[in-house]
Amino acid sequence: MNQSDIQNEKIKTYQILAEMYSDDFFPNFLVDKCKSILLELCSKIEKETPKNLVELYELTHAATDRFNDMENEFYENNSEIETGARECIAVDFEYIAHAYGFDDADIEELIATREW
Image (spheres, one colour):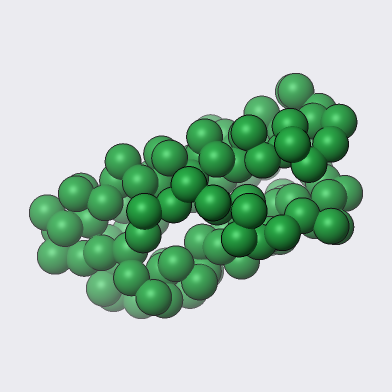
């Protein structure tokens, strides 16, 4: 999925996972996969139009679970979803929620199923 496929203008122009891309500790091909997870989350939000935080959290938890599934792939490439990555990913989840009008979304609840 390409960022240009997203309808939300705030997301189209946002630098997703910028801190991870700028850090050589994170292989770009893995960051690309992470970015795809977030873009697919945006697409689902646009298609399913969650009506409340409970519905939004269902979508963000599913996306978070996909990040969980990538942990071994990071380890296999001498990397990990560590403090800097955790912060970067969490902030982007929050940005996405706000971009779609969920200004009262709790950053910790957005990624509550995280194992990283």
